[in-house]
Length: 148
Image (spheres, one colour):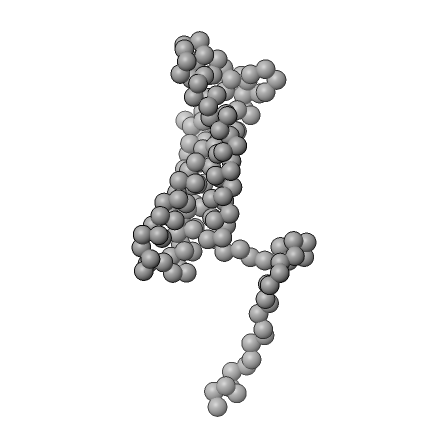
């Protein structure tokens, strides 16, 4: 009798084979999926920026002259590359490291506590990961660009 009293729900749209041209505009990825994809992106970004990291480390520690050149690269540029570009690359590296680190801690926590993992925890921890990495990146980026 109660089945007749409730109106039937329209069937939910099923995504079996996602077409990149038609379905990606309507497909809503959950926060955990976004964090998972960004975890991979940040790992690739850190790998691709490894020569820049090695250059920064070597130049900043070799001598007083090379450290002065390192500071000049970030302030006024180096060759045809302006200084703000070096700062932007360093900011991307800061975000990649922070996001990868926080998402890695999230994955480790989920691996350790199997009983606490559910859909709600996955959603809230993903939102925390996104928020924490963005806020920390903004704070360190403000320091990098000299706002404080």
